[in-house]
Length: 248
Ligand code: URA
Image (cartoon, rainbow, N blue to C red; front, side):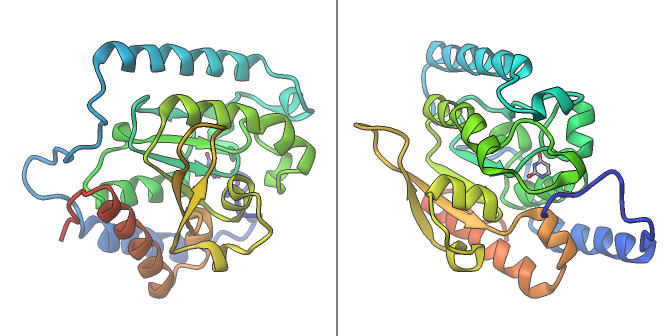
């Protein structure tokens, strides 16, 4: 299971956690943008009315998600986690499902995996508010177990509608569950990552480019230089595709 957990393993290796944190600072903070930190072109420059409309539609979905009882997870959650961010984002990050921290706060990617995602976003010269962050499942599976097929089937329409509204130019699928669900494939994350794929959001709509990369929770557990380099290479491809500068 990819997800982090509040119920951390009983034997927490504090040294490892501290080392990862320091490395995370060095590896990704090194790419922080220069100047005033203003991101270059994270918005699609739609007219403000259209963006306000998107925001309203996303809020409607969020309200539905908070009431949702389509599967058992709806009765087990503390908070649903509909997703959050820029309604007009060019980049949409999609994870697997909320973990314990997210369940407690009702916000996506706020635990350790989320802190690493924040670093990666900053390393790209962007801010969290520039992008949209969501998940395949909107409620936490107990003990952070893998999502079940019937839960994905119940929940996926929320994510599909979010993608239709936001119309991101690129979806970054974090980890195997997000990538395999959105691409409807059984291929492994190792096979999928590092290349653009096409996500089809509906008849008559152009496909959205999808970059699959490792989940940040996986990265924390397998914190090698090689894995960090792979994720950074994947994100550089995203920046190039969007014509955004690569912070040096
Ligand atoms: N992992 C996920 O896949 N999603 C979250 O929101 C947090 C951790």
